[in-house]
Image (cartoon, rainbow over all chains, first blue to last red; front, side):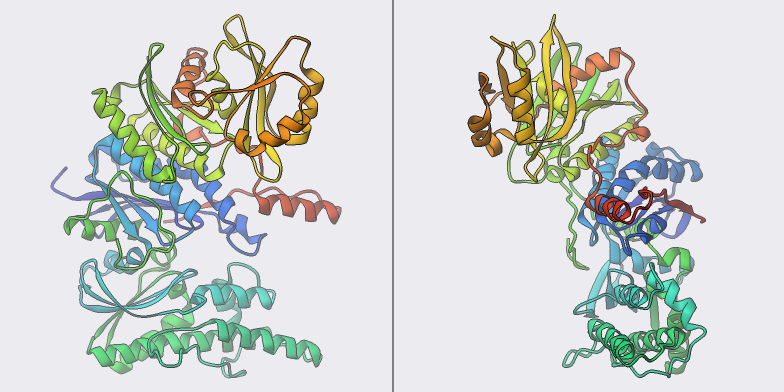
Length: 340
Length: 253
């Protein structure tokens, strides 16, 4: 509308109600996030019905703030984008219905965006020099994917978790040792006081599929360790346990990524998702990448956790590739990367 | 005055354009597709068909609840998105009053029931007096057995009850067994949610100054989430004050 391509993006796949305006696929004109983490803490995890209720309560305020901060009206944007999966269906539906109605009423194209594609695209905000092909590791509370980004908006999935997501394992272990929710930051902080080599936990690999992950066995090993300690009245050093568990998670994420980089001859690695805010993972991946001669890209923490800026960035590349969604766009809770 | 009206509170999805006492268009579908897939394409269709310039509407009317939590949110989010884009207010219409309006002018008590699971219905009791909808019992969740007892008690000699809503096929057998007062069931043209009824009632509410800013609207659930109910039970069992869901916060960006 002004020589630029400005996209209003909406994200409501879990417990963040978010809207952003993104210019030309990388410039963040606004990025508003209403986070519900605190109100789900008492339940030990996200309650989908409560999350959905908060989304509908806050959505217009969040969208209006995003437009105001960008100094725009809805009529000034070129397209409206929204996360339509994967995620919690009831939560997704709020954003999808809002975005569709806004786009329809304002006569704007609608672009449904894959949440995981959004996470990986978060890297373009601070690293406009990053271009496909590169290797991507998306690790969050709901997702663990090792992918090759072949081209803009084109992906090959090398591996994924066969059970729990990495972030889910953090949440479950944090709950088991009484650190509470959300597990990622709590374990990260606790682990800083502990010895990562104090306890040897099994690696979260999957036999026979070299790039897949399995975190449920690792979680069980932690629970078994706790049970055994309780039965023998041994005192558990929480910091050591957190550090050792975290090391086991980080080790498998790093080793799979580096092996894939070597195998496919890729020299650029990008991390994304809430777990990529973990300090041990950032440090471990940075060290391994340097050793392997790879360049590592990681978004700032604010772009690692759920946000709409990343959705707007992903939408820009979809928009340029000609992607348009219909007014019948539905929420797809189990949406796969690369599927439409 | 011109309204877009939306009802996705129950099994049927319905949209309408209502203008100065006339239904310009109404589109209702009661089929296995989700409201998320049907609602906006239906609205797109009727606005095109009637060559409506949506920027010229005065407000968006929505069946605000109770109903299916997810269904309500699809309708509410659609209404809020329209409200934000068009800078128009929302008129909230209680779902059961909207349903009762299907039977405008009917004699006796109007008793819409929606299946609320757990042997309960969402229900309000209404009557028409001098051309106005009068609320006899405000909308609430109520056990089917409780509703039957209440009606058996309150229906006067010579008075009748007319049932409608998607709770009828679910609980008809129970009603037949328990009711000792004369009663009827609304036919297919009036038995389920219709956006034209929501729009017609909204015209009255709008004239009474009851429109609200779109951002302030949220569904009327009439029930807390299961997690909150269980938490309240735990709190009560432990003799603690019952905890309320807190507000979240804006992340600094």
